[in-house]
Amino acid sequence: MSGPAPVTTETISEAVVETQPVIISGDRIHTIQGAGLRSPLEGKTVSNISGIVTAFRADGFYMQDPDPDEDEGTSEGIFVFTGVVPRVRPGDEVRVSGLVEEFYPGGLESNNQPITHIVDPEVNIILSGNVLPAPVLIGEGGRVPPTEVIDDDGGKQFEQQQDGLDFYESLESMLLQIDSAVVVAATNAYKETAILPTGISHAGPFTARGGLLLRIDDQNPERILLDDGLRPVPDAVMGDQLAASVVGILDYSFGNYKFQPIMKVSFIRGELTKETARPAQEGELIIASYNVENLDALDNPNRFSGLANQIVNHLKSPDILVLEEVQDNNGILNDGTVDANETYRLLIDAIVETGGPEYQFRDVPPLDNRDGGELGGNIRVGFLFRTDRGLQFIDRGRNPSAAPEPVANAGEIVLSQSPGQIQPNAGAFYESRKPLVGEFSFYGQKIFIIGVHLNSKSGDTALYGLYQPPRLDSERQRIQQANIIQRYVAQLQGLDPDALVVVAGDMNDFQFSETLAALKGSNLTDVVELLPVAEQYTYVYEGNSQALDHILVSTSLAKQVSEVDIVHLNAEFLENQRTSDHDPVLAYFRLQK
Image 1 (spheres, helix red, strand yellow):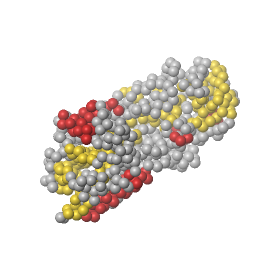
Image 2 (cartoon, rainbow, N blue to C red):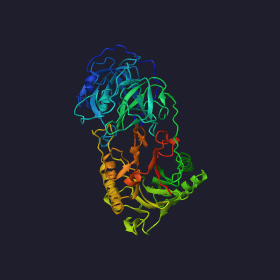
Image 3 (cartoon, helix red, strand yellow):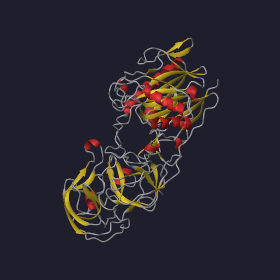
Image 4 (cartoon, rainbow, N blue to C red):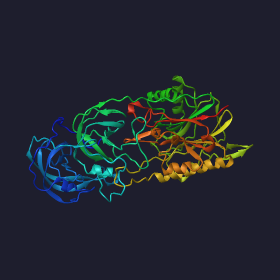
């Protein structure tokens, strides 16, 4: 998020980055900061702390010692909290006395790391018009952040050369300079843009389109968020580059260290384009998983036309679309409405108007406000399917809320209920989407599709949060959900080991996670893992490209996979350039007539 209040004075000169001698007396800033995550002088009063004001905001100012010590583990910058707009300005030499405090942005309940502040200050201006202390260069030719580990010892040791958390803590509230950087995540709703300083050896691994891949042993601490807390910053998308060197303050808020420029920022635009899948060949079935991000009938018509354009022109009208985050007909209007028929109809009509086929839909409406998501929205999983290429949906049963039990009938498996939901009353699915099951036939071959949207990551702590390693409180419920779905697949395969089964959706977890391990078991293949590693991502969060959306298939169906494609047309782009925050996953199956 944007963090501190914006600066209210003129732009700071971009030339004042040289060092000028200043008379130092009393305690030193690096003594207050110490080599650690907390100040060794926390709770004590310090006097006559000398420094140069580097920037200010509505509730205080940053100051830095222009005469640093030789210990790179101790920051030379600190924030002085005044509670009101301070009377100091950049370039003022000041002496400050006050109480050393560790401040938690958002409060202790936010699980943020603390920032060292001086509070209740007495501020004396000694001399104005000084040039600012020399900034610390980050990247090639300067200080290089770790490239894999954020923290591996629970904060027990301070290792700024090995742990990303310690590296940035050692630069807290200091002036930094980044000469060149590439954007690795588009500007988000909070005006944060993830960038990677260039020239960092061992950075990556990278996606095929220039992003940073999140891996089980690599959380990419080399990335940093460029923020607009001190002055406006233009929007950027994946692959854009800084046009010139930028100087700014290293701050922290909302679980992240943030680079706050004190000078104008501009970008050289890249050439990122949206991808397009290939159409199906004769006898080939395409199944897609697509999170449509809280789609409801009251959304702007442009959302429906945009989705239709993607489905028809970029995804080439897949045979089956497993949709997640379909909301009821009036979205977050909390009036008891649960039906989504108007939402589906607007999308289907938009697809036809774009030149695509007329799809049909199936879902099981949730009980009001029982499936999580936005209050009143009644989020759910749904099937969108076309019937002009040999595909049929097999409707069976009269109680969609009943469990769809698989039974053997005349030598084949049939579901007692289609569509239906797997164990909708199980505690694992409390306040979460229920798995949707449907029975399909493609040129006479029976296929069982399970649409899934597992429990969200809401409640987990941040990568740079107070708890190290981060708490994954939401994971337990996802694993429970995965185990239930896996047992259902095993039940199908117990009746027919060659059953064609697909589990598709937004799993809210990674291919290397315990959740996916539980879901895969020994009888399902995640087709995302059939792609080159550089293509395995469907979502970009704070500069980490990651796979949250997956399609898993049974052993017999895995043998018939002809292609897998994650179509990158949303996650790397600005909000006004996309129709969802997820990229869809497509799986092609060679199923001859």
